[in-house]
Length: 302
Image 1 (cartoon, rainbow, N blue to C red):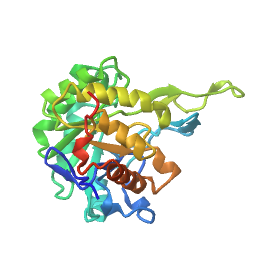
Image 2 (image 1 turned 135 degrees about the horizontal axis):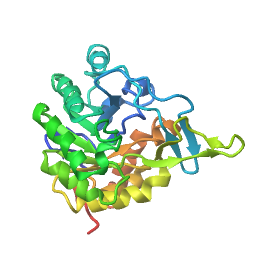
Image 3 (image 1 turned 90 degrees about the vertical axis):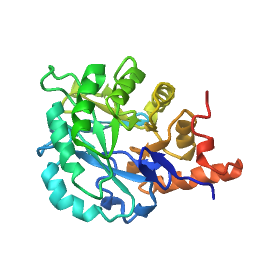
């Protein structure tokens, strides 16, 4: 078996396979299908400082080679997570990472500070695709200044591994990544969902309740690969790749483009065992090609 271990700053992963936030619940929902402790990391669903009801239904729509969602970060808030969810997941045996969302730099920081106090949460992932309520609703992650403001505020109060999840809905994603790196991000993950829309021609209206939503699944993989490649060649911090990964071949493509680790997202809805299949498939490919350590393929494409 090849050496599959990788590091994201101080965060040690037994293998590079992570789960994408919003597609794996809190991990426990998949415990009957996957030996959770064998994953590199589990990123739990998005958590905000205050409880959120999410958007009205319908908020999911199937599309060719993908899906749209506008769930709206439905969750019971950071205090509920700390009191009720954390005790049930802290001993799973792998890296449990919380995806943190907010609507202002101060709001993000307050949520991150609560996660900083949890001993068995070694990292957080900042979702900077959220709308800036003080900036006219534009997502933090679509401007260099917006992204930097969130990372700067969180870095002041959060002392563990800080991953920033980047929006693809930008002109130059590498520039946004550089801004995050400059403010103290330990890694970046990309891509988040691509803004999209579906139309019901019989009802003559959008399928989703708020008209638009985030597109994920195989349809976005070529976009994600390009952005991971560009970002990995721009920053010095680790890059975590995601976007349409359904099997080991997909994962290896991302790693060859420069990703140190990968996240499996939408594919979990199709096959709840896909994460372990991806891990085993990566190992099989490495063995077949005589590769002893996974680092040999990370960034293999110049």
